[in-house]
Each structure stands twice: as structure tokens, then as C-alpha cells.
Image 1 (cartoon, rainbow, N blue to C red):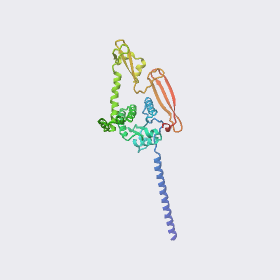
Image 2 (cartoon, rainbow, N blue to C red):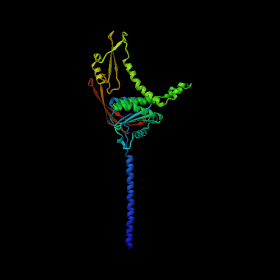
Image 3 (cartoon, rainbow, N blue to C red):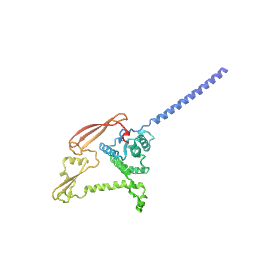
Image 4 (cartoon, one colour):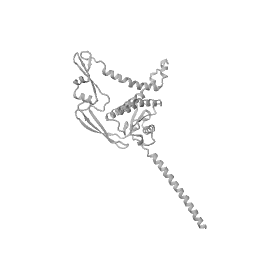
Length: 346
């Protein structure tokens, strides 16, 4: 009887020990699972200091113009702006929002002094239709509302029309103009006049709205006037006549007509009826075509491809394929993508 009691008591102790061990294994497994899910969170890499297009939205021409504009900001020591375009937020985690991703990316990149103080991160998620502009610590919180208006009034309307490149380029210029605008400069020190009191009473966000809408509404009219204003002949001082599209083709060569056909350049032809002097004016807005080095017409197509992305430790390589629609000039260039080095920007 005593032996049976000892047996069951040993069996009970063994069962408790086994139960405790199983619970310990389950707890460790759960801990590993949670930690694994936390550390499996991935974020888009900053392969380029200025432009990272993971959704393939930008055309080569737009990419070139944006890079040139952003580089100018850095060279003038004004601010550092970087553009990140992703395909979808779900590619980097189910619980991510556009705000949380922008904050995380900004904190990861603000090792650069430029990002920390005068940095601007423009984050676009194509499939989600979301845009976020994250500002550095050198800007006040009041600027956040201005950035929201740039998104709503400049970028989103163009995105809805699927004019993504135009929306991004216009958005970058509007961000730059809005951040440059300082209402304080309008105020003189003394005397404190009624005009100054009135200006001080206007909220800062109102200045931003006036600046944005003023540039949007007024600039097209200024461009229209500069293009179609009356012209005077430089030879005889007589009034010149602007020819219509059919008649102007008589004075344009084959290359000019091709430029107009692909909409890289638009020409106006002015004729002096008195001395028959001809004036040809050229207008070229944002275009995906570049000027051909052989024939000098703006008929050069450019295709861009990253062959190997740069990393923290190695250089990358990119390829540019050029083809002229006018003279059939072709060329391929390979360029080195430098090793990622954010500290070099500061």
C-alpha cells in the first residue's frame, strides 16, 4: 500500500514538472513569435539621396528635372528635400499608416543635419492614393497646415487626372515657395500703424493660401501676356502679325514641325507686313524630350534604368538609353550611383 502511494505521488510530481516545462516552452515560443514579428518590420531603403521611385511613376525627363531642382536647393543651402514613392503601404506592414511610415523614415534619415533642421520628406503611396509631407525640426507646426493645403490644392487634383509627374513637380515647387514665404518680412519695425496692425491680425495660414492660389491663378495670365503681347518689328518699327498654325508651318523646318508634333516645343511666327521681316519665338515647358547633341532639336527620347542599386558599402550602376526621333542618333551611357552617404549632405 505504501509503495502504491509513493508511485502515485511520484507520478503526480512528474506530471506537475512536465506541465511546468510545457508552459515554459509555450511562453518562450510566444515571446520569440512576438519579437520576430516586431523585428520583421521592413521599410523602403533610401537608395538615392533625392529620388526613390519604387512605384515607377516618374518619367526620365521628370526625374531629371526634379533632381536638378532638389540639387539646387542643397547647393543654395536652403533646404534638403527628398522624394519617396512606394507602391503600397501594405508592402511594409499591415498596420502602417502614411503618417507613421513618414515619421519612421524621417527619424531614420535625420542623421543628416540637413534633414534634422531644414529637411522635407515627400512620401507618396500610389495604390493607397495617400501623400504625406514630413518637415524637419527647423519648421514650426503651423507649416503642417500649409503642407496639407499644397497636397489638397496642387497635387491631388492632378493625381486624379493621372497627371502624376506634373502633380509631383508642381507640388515640389509649391512646397518650396510656401516654406520660403515669410509674412514677418512685410512688417516694418516702426511706427506701429493701422496697416501693420491689420497685417498682424491676419493668420499665417492665410498668407500661405494667398501665395499658393496667387501663383496658380496669376502666373498663367502672365505667361499668356508675355507670349501673345503685341510685337514691333525691329527693322522698320511696324506692328507685326502673329500667323495662325497653318500659315506658320511655311516658315518652320522639318525639325521644328516634329517638335510641335511630339509637343516638346511650341513655336509662334510673327510677320511684318511692311518689310516682310520674320520673328520666330520658341516655347518649351516641361517635356520628357531632351535636346539632341547631333541635330540640336528637342526630339531626344531618354529611357532610364537602374542596373544595380547602391548600398551602404558598394556603388550601383544606372543606364541611360538615348534615341533621337529626328536624326536617329542613338547612345547608351552607364553612370555610377555613389555609395549611400547621408553625412555628406550636412
